Length: 153
Image (cartoon, rainbow, N blue to C red; front, top):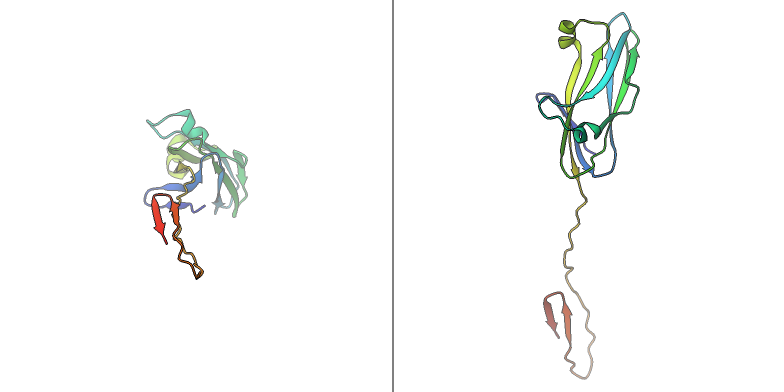
């Protein structure tokens, strides 16, 4: 899986995920302060785009309540499992517990999660036909049919 985070878009994109399969992404959450930090992780619908199918395709695998010790870090894991060939998007939020709503806007970590459900695709390419004909003293005529092409020898 080749997933990517776009800084300007503030979006993490799960690429090339086959319908019904799981793709995981691990995010490192750091605390550079002198005191421990309590977090609540959640996945929310994007405003105006609520569908339960979209948000249910993203799941937090790690605990949703975390504590990051002072000058330390923890990892959060998000799993994306598309159920159909469509576009999915949601909002990942790591909210600091115990801060006012005004402070939370600037301190909480939020970014968009996005991905598409894909189906495997195969193409059948006609192989080039190569035959080594043996030389016979008698001239033979044969007709070999392959798809819509006819080879006459």
